[in-house]
Length: 243
Image 1: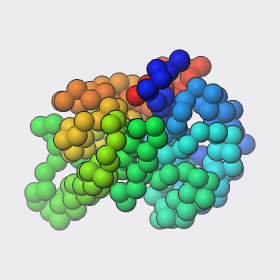
Image 2 (image 1 turned 90 degrees about the vertical axis):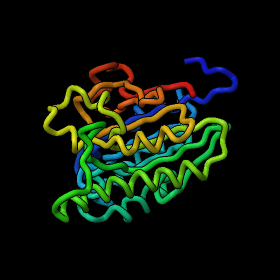
Image 3 (image 1 turned 180 degrees about the vertical axis):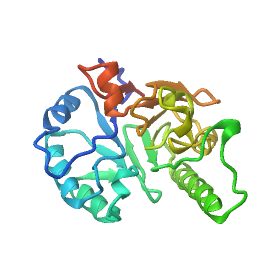
Image 4 (image 1 turned 90 degrees about the horizontal axis):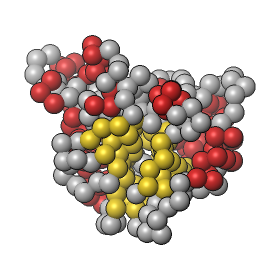
């Protein structure tokens, strides 16, 4: 891809699921991305069980990446309750974690992100009614959307990119069993996104979903889960978008 002089090439991939004892390396992938993109966005589930040793392995592979890297965590990265240690390892590898209102700017493009959460989409979105566990579930989705809103509010760049793990729209989870749609994302994220002029949204999580969709406002959304990208374009298992 030959980029326009005033544009930024964003590579995005999610669901790396790095295993502690795996012999597989992502160095070749990161080296290739460095040759085709200006910045890499990692869309959660970076580790398999959320272990610091898995993050160490990813950090070692990221040495092959010669461009800035931004990231959010996914549900797998929270599995062992050591997500803060995982983030510490990645930050030490110069990864910008787009959480807690932390943002990143490069060549006039601002990056904001959040893990996101489930809750369903559109008229089927779960509401905070009934038992306390349901209310807690919805509250988590609302809080993730608020974190994203705070980050977006802090940006003053001409262009904006959002990085998530969970999907903000139903279109990019189509292909997954409908029964699990409520656990793959939430329209609350899209509602937040559409309050701003966002140029592109990247997410992962839905391994068998669809690669592209749009919010109600028309903002393009890309599901860049690696397992999906390998099916869509085996020679380029990541999304590459010019912003």
